[in-house]
Length: 398
Ligand SMILES: *Cc1c(COP(=O)(O)O)cnc(C)c1O
Image (cartoon, rainbow, N blue to C red; front, side, top):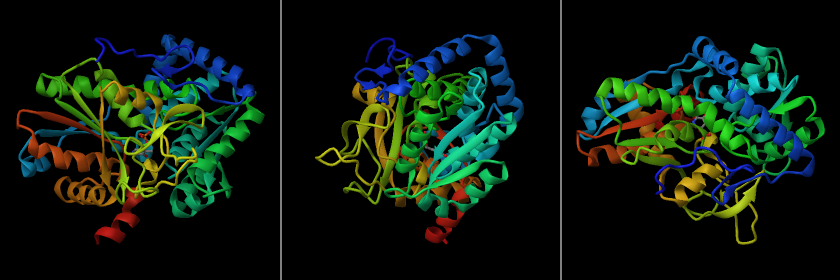
């Protein structure tokens, strides 16, 4: 591991060999403009102040770092702390990024926002900030997902967003991303595309990560206040990888802090039955970035499966591919069954219904905590609340 890990990618957005800008020619200039505008905003105290105030007064930051005492005592090993992103406005970490990006869009003079969404969580976060800033909002969503996530579709529409069904292919997230890209190529003059995870072309993976770093910055300060030392281990689930990058990034140069990313193991590591890109995936390019993804031998993107829609995607964010390649972060997976068991454990032990995405991180904590000494400290990111998953969890658990 290098002494000091780079905190920014190179000028074209590479983290080692990963990342980059694999986009149609017409988007190159707008993306370079976006990167420049972001760089300026980042260094502008007025931008940071507006963002910080909204994160505090509107979104509900800082979130608590909660000692899960009963769970810890039941497992009899490392002390478990939960970073409570589930308590944020709209119920998950995604609003941190949606808010940062809409402030940037406003600076760029854009009047229209587009997004795509799978489970609907990012769509809801985007519709929320669009309502707050009076911007036109169009959300692309697979027709199949719209049916599965009717509640989130209604939430978006109630806040004034237009939700456009996408019927191509599997009619899920990947197709919705393609449709959003098509829209953006034609409308980039007045439109900003709020990407919802640490994915896509540069500068998105860096920008999205930065808007979520507040998670790790707070957690670091909070654990030092509570315990007087850094944690032994950080754990987070990894879909595109934004909540994990947000927690991990401020600790990357603390060599004694282990970090574990948990992907979706679905029904187990069989073709088309999971979404664990580091388990049998390969290097390729998908939707703007070069990274680790699930594809067959012809390079065709494979179908994926997970009980949690938010982790059900064929590619992982490029910075995770980099951190895996240099061995700084370990990656493992939890199956649907393990995630559901962890959902139930947290519900009955701590009175917290975690999102099924977050339940994957909790499943790993459940496994590892008893194997670690009581003097160890784990911080696990509780990326979202499980109200949206109640129906699915009831089907399996009641
Ligand atoms: C979307 C989502 C995720 C997965 O996205 P990342 O970018 O990997 O963080 C995880 N947890 C919750 C609650 C989500 O809504």
